[in-house]
Amino acid sequence: MQSGSIYERYGGFAKINRVVMDFYDALLDSDELGPYFDNVDMARLIDHQTKFVSGLLGGPVDFDDEVLRRAHRHLRVTQEHFDELKRVLGNILETHAFLPADVQTVLAAVEARRPLVVA
Image (cartoon, rainbow, N blue to C red):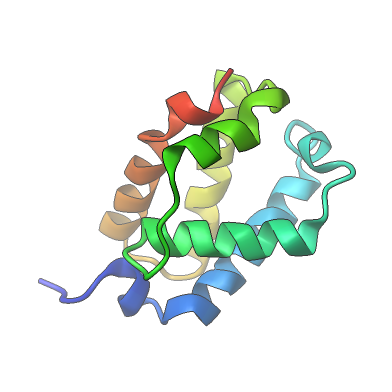
């Protein structure tokens, strides 16, 4: 059994930042999801999301569910788009050599937040 949080095992903030950057590169290339990011300050979003994902993985950052709900309320994210986001995230985690069990743990943490994001 591995010790430490997923955040620690995969190199902390710098590594998670690379994962998040690749994740958003893939989302921006998506015909379905890319339009959600039109007119978005991507540098600010990537910084924010790196902190959010770090917290999901057991890092030192924690986010309030209400902040997540407010940030997505106006976007009208569909179930299908959320599913696609999870698929892309899983692929990116695998590309960054996350172990299958850790990929599933991350995707389960994301799934738990579906009601906060999906309209």
